[in-house]
Amino acid sequence: MASGQFVQETSSAGEWKRQGNRFTGRITRDSTSRPGEGPDDQGRWPVEPGRYRLVVSLACPWAHRSVIVRRLLGLEDPISLAIVDPVRDERGWRFTLDAGDTDPVLGIKFLSEAYLRTDPSYDGRVTVPAIVDTNTGDVVTNDYPQITLDLSTEWTDFHKPGAPQLIPPDRAEMDVLIDEIYRDVNNGVYRCGFATSQEAYDAAYDALFARLDVLEGRLQDREYLVGDTLREVDIRLFTTLVRFDAVYHGHFKCNRQKLTEFPNLWAYARRLYQRPGFGETVDFDQIKRHYYVTHHNINPTGIIPKGPDPRVWISWPVRPEPR
Image (cartoon, rainbow, N blue to C red; front, side):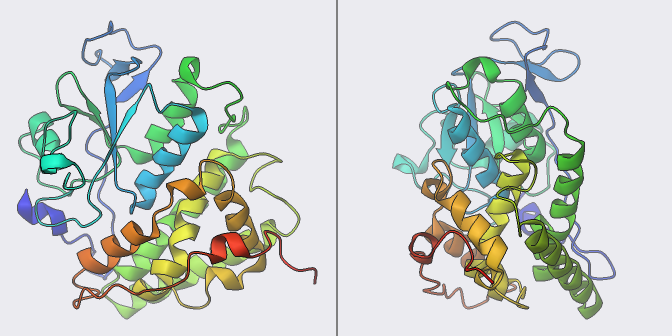
C-alpha cells in the first residue's frame, strides 16, 4: 500500500495515465437490498439517510465536485462529510484535522484502512472522493464521476426544496461537453504537470488551451455551458478553473495565460464562485498546501507560494468589460 501512493502513472512515451476507479458500487433507489443490508447482486446499495459518509479533500478538484453538489442539493444531513488533511504521504489521506487524528464516525486514522478493509489486496493510490458505509466501514465507491450523478438522480427524495436540476432531461449535449472538458481540461492540467517527456507535455498543453479557447468563445453570449441554468458540467469545469491560477498555471506549467486573462471564462468562474454552494467550499490554503507540498517531484523545496490574492474572486465585476 505504501508504495502505491506515489505509483508511476505515466506511459513509456511520458504521458500521464490516470488510474481507474477500483470501487464502483452505486447507491440507488432500485437496489433490491433492504435498509442496513449490503449491496445487491448488481452492486447497488440502498439509499439510506445517515448511513453513508462522504470522504473528501478540499484540495482535490475531483472531490470538490461532490462537496458542491451535496451542498446545492441540501444533502448535508442525509450524507455526512469527512475532510482529510490536504497533505498526503506514503500512507495516503490522513484524518489529522480531527481530534486524535481519527475520523470520529469511521474510527480510522487513514482512508487506506477503509480501502484495505474492503479489498485487502489493494495496492493502488487511495483516492477521494470516497463514500464509506458507516455500518461496515467498507468503501462503497470511489467512482468520482458517478458519485455526483447519483447524488442528483438517486437521492431526490432527500433534496431540499428548490434544489437545482443539475442533470438535464436530455443529457446528450452535456455529456459531450463533459467528455471534452474531462479529457482536455480536468485531466489535461494533470497531463501537463505529470508529463515526463517534452512531446507528451506539448500535446497536453496544446489540447488544454485549444479547449479553453473553445470554452471562452462558447461563453461569449451565455451564462452557463448548457442551456440557461446551472448544470453538472458547470461544476466539473469550475473545480478546475478555481485552481488554475493558484496551482496549474505555475505548478503544472499551464502558462500560456492565466484564467484572469480569459475575459469570459474568468467572469463565468467568478459568477459561480459568488453563488451559494461554490465560494464557501473553496479553501485556497488547503489547495496550495496539497499540490506544492505533496508533489515532491515537481516542487522539491515544498515552498508554498503566497499568492495569488483570493480577494480577486469577489472584488472584480462578474462580467467582462464591453469590447
